[in-house]
Length: 314
Image 1: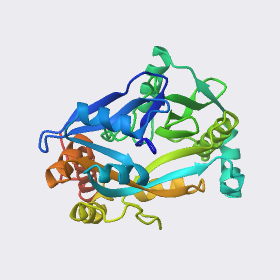
Image 2: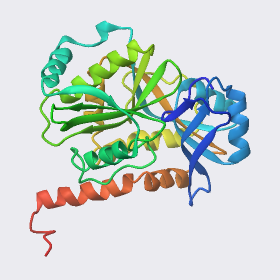
Image 3: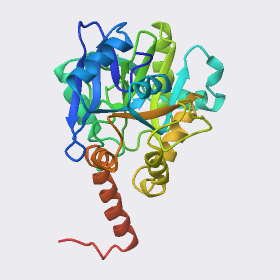
């Protein structure tokens, strides 16, 4: 494949392993994550894909892969932009970010934790103390938690009190991808900057050339579509116009601001579906990803703030 979709990873296995979600309204299968053999060709992967899933949808697709799938008859629509950091470009990190990372690093040490049941449970427990722990968690948009296809780095105090944690997967032998980002409530300023700067240095020393910070939906960030004659034009309009509604439940501008401070290159990201993109599919994704749960949570929360007595319970 020209480049694996976000949250798909390369592993030393003999055949692909797809993880899918059945979408009841559209009748398609959402392939949210997958493990793909190293150096597997695009043609072989596509043959396996259509053999297992006659109707499928994939998100987090790069421009090159989107063009390939479009040529195979899939509908393709842009959903946002991906932040990719060049690990061999030390000038990409601003002095202000490095200073913030230095301040955050005073609070502890960054280290990688090994995969084990103990640490799987500890990451899950840490998530309950993270900044957005009270909100409904989005599903299937990235790899949540700590599993055998991810690595986990934490910034911890001398007493092993975690202040921040991130998990990463590996798209190929040169590019890693950020999955889960967790920050403890009331953690000191600079903790997450220190964590990312340290992980970038570690990955570079290990031979990686790029780190994807993941997608920010609804963002174009000056990047132009490189897939000619995009299909699903109405869907593209619907997705990007819906950002005014979604910004009340999902702070994509804040996410963009955090990722942009690391000086990434922003690349367009697409949704691909075969045989096609429909309003039923978009509704399926909205429901299955739990965006609907997050939207309702934020709506009720905002109503409570506007009129505390209106929704008082008990």
